[in-house]
Image 1 (tube, helix red, strand yellow):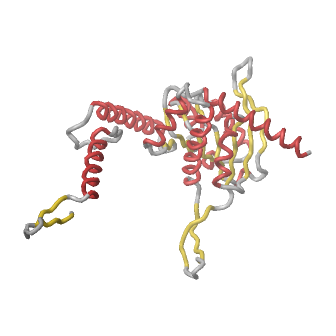
Image 2 (cartoon, rainbow, N blue to C red; image 1 turned 45 degrees about the horizontal axis):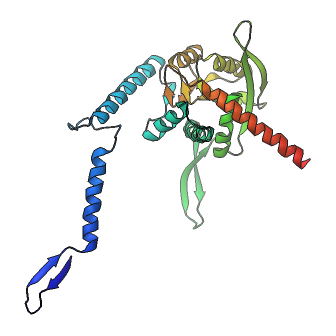
Image 3 (cartoon, rainbow, N blue to C red; image 1 turned 180 degrees about the vertical axis):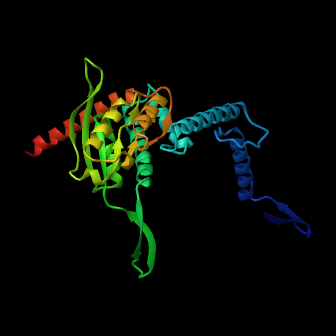
Length: 292
C-alpha cells in the first residue's frame, strides 16, 4: 500500500500499489481456474459438483467397486498400482489408436518404470547401518541378494530396460513361448535362466495378460527348474479379469502386479513393441558391423 499526502493538507490518502493489484488479479484468476478444474477424485462431502466432476466421480466409484470385487474373488495375490491421474493419462495415451509412435514408446516406458519400481518394492529387504560422509550412522535397508528378472519374449523384452535402469547389475533370463498353429496351445521354444534360479526371487515380465496361457506355460517351465511359484512376481501393464483369474487358479501362490484390470486388453501393444524391438535390433547389428 502506497501513501500520498495532498499538497498543503495533512490528509493521508492510501492507494493500492501495483503489486497488490497484481496479487488481487492472480487470486481472481486462480479462483476462476479452480472452479473449472476437472477433479477426478472429488470429495464425497462436497455438495456442489459440476456435471463433468460428477461423471468422473461415478466412473471412479465403478472402477473401485469392480477392482475391489475382483480382488475379493482372486485374493491378495492380485496387486494394483494405486490409481492416479498420471497413470490414467499414460493408460489413455497407450490405448489411443491415434497416438504417434514416439509418444507411445515414451508413455510405455514411463508406465513400465512405475510397475518395475513397485515390483522391486515387493522384494525382500534387510536392515543395515551405514556411515555418512560426516561420520554419522544411518539406519537403512538394502536388497537381499538372490533376485533376477525373466522376460517372456518378445513383448516382455520391452520391460528389461526399465528393470536395468533400477537394478543395473541384475541378471535377466529369457523364455520364448508361442501358440502352436495346429493345437493353439502355448509351446516353449526357448528358455535360458541363471543356473541357480531355483534359489532366487523372480520378476517375470509380460506387459499384456489376455488369456493368461502364455504366462501359465512360462511359470510351469520355471517350476520345472525348481522355482517355487511363491517366489515369482509377475509384472504386467494391463490384464483382463479372465487372464488374472486363470493364472491365480493354476498357481495360487504367484503374485500379479499390474496397473489395470479391464475386459478389453490393448493387444496392439505387443505389435508396436515388437516393431520397436526390431528397430533396436537393427541398430545394434548396424553398430556392430560398423565397429567391425
